[in-house]
Image: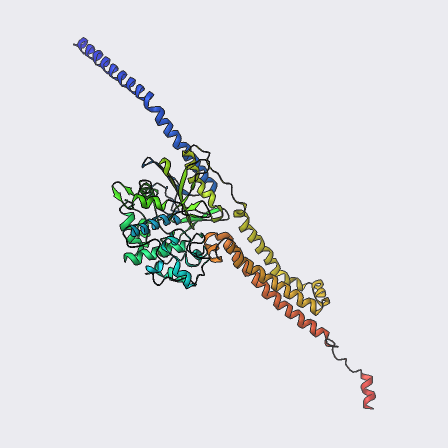
Length: 533
């Protein structure tokens, strides 16, 4: 019995050994065929992940998401770091997209054009009779296409004057556009390019007027929902529902959480958002000739027109919401859009010729380091195309500007407390020796210099960056608040020197009167006796 059991065991073990050997051989053969391809893909994404992670480390970005599209599908996606609430970022983490909103608004307008509700070369006032700039004649000649291509004559500065309101009251978008009536146009419509989110706010108001619906709900119905962008943000309600984590601004080089509200008034030009997966679906439709998974949102002809460079811009050429150029280091045509808000950065790079695209979303941004933040997307596209990735060094101004303002504030503070030296005897003697003319000239020079510095920092410096002091505080909080402090000290110094000049003049005038400071001599006793006698 035992021998029979042992014989059965040996036969069973032999069969198992042969089966296992067959499995191993098959696995080895399969491995010879499949492993090199898998390894190549794994190494490719590892190299890309390492590159973008290095860029995020360089910029100090706390959290980011990456998506790569090839051949009509998302082939790689990944989250990096954490959001501002301490949670790991994933491809489903929501961000705000900044000006990446513009191609979506452009697509909504083109839908209306294809439906016959809007003509691109018709004046805007055909659909918004109340639309006004400071020059009514210019307002009458601004067309829908001018707004789409940023050639409407609305200046770039208008974005900061009517934008970043964080206004979510009913009719917020219309109110922002109506405030353009005080903006003076730059040149003639169609004459020159001037990037302007204010112009896209007008397009959003136009969509509302023609459709009879608020911009956000209309965009969901016609663009976002048909494309399956389930968690996209185009209204305050979406923003609250998706619990969009706050982004980060930089204060002396360190990312600091910026918990800002949503801005309904800025939705068409900047305040849209969602996850990398949401944005991937929009990009897939753009690469797919206006359709995704059998749902069409725009004709193939409309997509081609929107992605065609129509006017020269600051960077490459500009179409109907998209920038168009060539990928650096290659000959590939590149259709792209970057977008930034205080606390967020986003970039889409499409390479239609090779059916590729890269999407990078970041939860931080620094206005003076914009190109560094965009390197992650551009560099990834270059790696996909076999070119060396771009890597921009930090602009020294980003570091020097806030610290320069702090040092200047310190020097001005010393100037403000300097009058305490008047308590010293040597200072008082020097003050007494000055003439009235010199006192007046010194006071006037101090006041004029202080006011000139205040004007330079309050108006001229922010204007050089295309904004105002309010926008400087919003986008560059360290430098912006330092400028506010410096201006306050210059005004204090001007008032102080004016007051001290008046005091010194009064003292000097008193000392100029004959015997003004000498007491009357007391009569001597002898003299008094003689008088009485």
